[in-house]
Image (cartoon, rainbow, N blue to C red; front, side, top):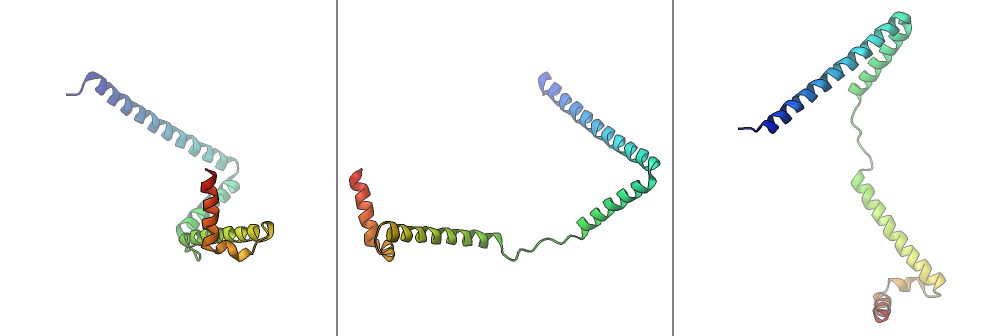
Length: 123
């Protein structure tokens, strides 16, 4: 058995749903009325507007789904590769030009072990 508060909540939901449906119907009726009034004032303009709406609907129906030449997953991979290349280029530039070392030395494992040892000693 449902309690009285549960019943009132259920009826309130139903009433609010009815109200929202009524508002939607009223809004549609107002828009239709407005269209009729505009058609009476200027029938040519109303016809053109209807034609444009029909053309848009036809375009939507005839629209083919896009087939991507460059898929999203491939784009992500390319971006990650470019980021990696930029990182390596920046390391080489920094080590070779600013640090007065050989740019290819930054790719050696021994250099990275030395850098990590310097960092760990400082801590």
